[in-house]
Length: 414
Ligand SMILES: *Cc1c(COP(=O)(O)O)cnc(C)c1O
Image 1 (tube, rainbow, N blue to C red):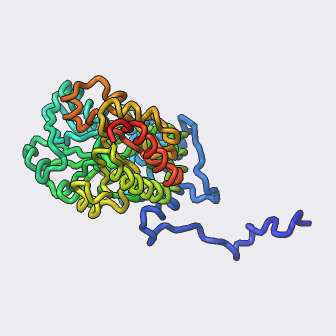
Image 2 (image 1 turned 30 degrees about the horizontal axis):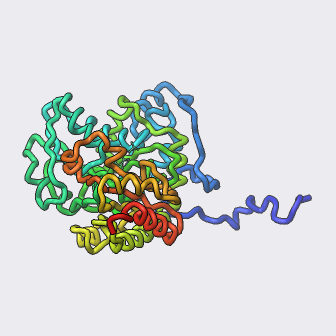
Image 3 (image 1 turned 45 degrees about the vertical axis):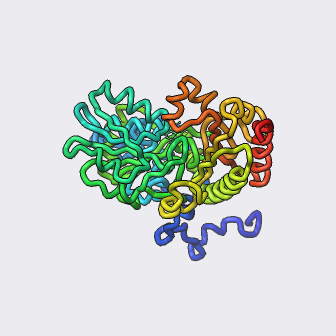
């Protein structure tokens, strides 16, 4: 006797329901929900495979598995089923053939740079970069005999003009870029012939921009940020052609910055809600950028979605939404910046971005406190510059909190 009606109904194959097939549904927000379900099983949440190693079915198979970049059941530093599910999801989202996950965004960035370039090679990079990438290019690359030329990434033709035919191995860009949301024209960058082109698109996940659509060879993300989206996974990822990812794999397994299965699981969990999170954060960031633009204590607001952004037309061409990051300058300089971060009540003072909580940083007194005023200026940071990563709180609350903090920080000057 059946314990309950319906018990055992799954055994009736005439009523089988097909698993979803992402083919034909190409919007990144849809792929974020469907992609990376490699097991083909009935579970909807990702499975965690913490195992470091796997039983080898035969010696011959073991030899083949050890050298196969696509093998995920040999040894976890080479590949892992949970990590591979995240990699497959990212490749689908980016419109790429393959992807490789890393232990952090810097793991991904350093693998691209040191895995592709050798002594005697030349790199063209933009001046506006994440500080870790900047330091790697400026201080570490010369130690390995890799020559780097920095250009202004917002200047038309600047990357191409700096390429040395036959010597430039890599052109490295970031868009939107730290710290002032400068943009790089991806169409122009993608048209450069000769060197490989890599773009760090951490500020614009695939719901917003897909660099490979513009002829870029490698798209890089710190998935610690918006892709993971919950401040609970330290993770990086690089997407591109199968051939390029295989050649990065050969360096990555020696570099050893492989993604942890637990972080990959959280990353995959985060991806499922990418579309709605980006929409909410973009909407609130625009609302906030507009509100702060009209504030008497705010000298300037930088947000790609504002008509006042010098590259707003480019932003409209290559960004589906304008993202959750913005920067603004408080009139009143350093003192106002410090007062601002002390006055926020909803926003939290912390580095990183793309998570559920709205975060603010006053660069001049924290991350860049060691720099002189002229070094700060060269880095695009004013004494009163605040960077905001808009979270998932209600937009009205975020605007009220930051407006109130700006009132308090600049009360004496307006
Ligand atoms: C945070 C960040 C990185 C580094 O990522 P980690 O995961 O912290 O190593 C690289 N690029 C950009 C644009 C970032 O914001």
